[in-house]
Image 1 (cartoon, rainbow, N blue to C red):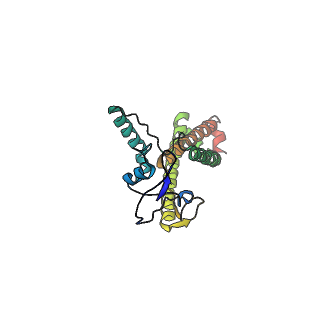
Image 2 (spheres, rainbow, N blue to C red):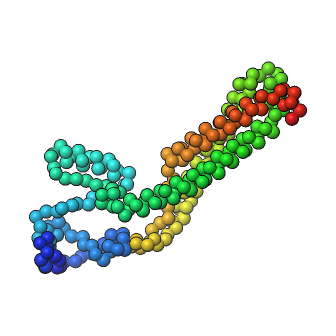
Image 3 (cartoon, rainbow, N blue to C red):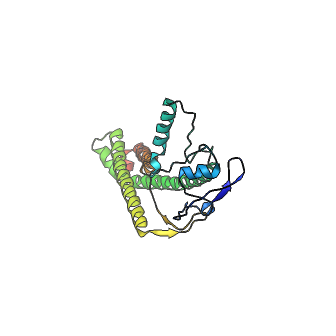
Length: 238
């Protein structure tokens, strides 16, 4: 092997190539070397390494591992810094690309959320307006206005919870079916193919479901309260 040393001189070393490896990225597939640390020190004629990359098995352990290493560096007074792969200090291109994708995803979520919210308000409003006689009957037998409003609000709450639960289950089932199909594709810049996988975020679904739940309750309560302002006779003949 021959390469430029740390001082910029051409330096050859004896080495035996025994296997091939893949970096996962087409741009670095033919420009990387996997070798023992001692061989790299001899090749580049250095006393140590300026940086070390640590590859974790799970992306969920990045923050935890980062905090643990920072604590070790601080406890041992080591003049070292650690950056996760998604830090803009070392991965500006990655951060910019992911920011653009998140912005596009947020825009589409806003559109779908708005359409769903309008659909919920419309269906709840029509459903309650068509039950004016039922509201009039409840009022005629002695139910108070606030009690009638909360009856329809609780009914809307149950319907909304059932719908959100069914939607969450359907999301998980759809993701499982797509992942089991093992759909392969060839994205640009990647060495070889990769699987198209869906990984629904449960907490994101919950965060989206909470405002939909509140919108449903508000629409039920507001429409029922508006109907209750009519006289009992008008409600019964509606």
